[in-house]
Length: 251
Image 1 (cartoon, one colour):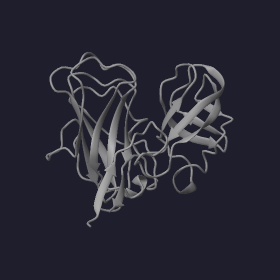
Image 2 (cartoon, one colour):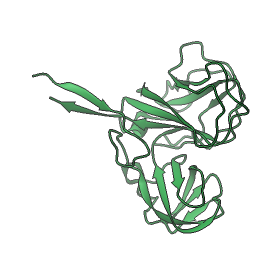
Image 3 (cartoon, rainbow, N blue to C red):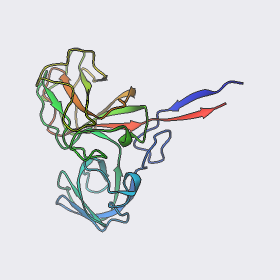
């Protein structure tokens, strides 16, 4: 009898792993105030992140009240409160708050990136401690991940042709300190993309999601470069997250 490696891609929104490895989503309740503050949390954001530390800056956050769109964790304010990137749209007591502490390639640095322009990761703060730099430990040692794009609003117009988002891992030669693969603003890299997230040739609106599956994660620290290979400018808010894939040894 031989062994077989079985991978299960999971789903970032289910909160029960399904093959995703690392720190599970943190779910509880909290109060919103039409500001960026969410307080009176029923979980401690200072100790519920990876390895018992704080939830990482740049994590994806869902808020159940007032039709508030998914948001980004800007900071952990205290043992019972967090600060979001965008002010909530209503005052609510006991709103369901869910924080997904998975690596965020693009989150708070997102802009209305024009067609054929680039943007480089700079917001997420993980184990490296430097904004926009990722380490294999951020993926709980996973060798691959499913990536998802979340549109926080509409593109500049309907997409046409074969639109997509291309991405490159800019690997570091010195442990993520300062020496990264050279990139030039608004130019594609002189090698094949490390991943591609296909987009529909259609109009996009807030809440649209697209995936790239089973993307290999570098062994060395890296930044992420995204190229908008579409015909329209990106929305002002958008997000690319990574769901580390667990591998199970079976016989």
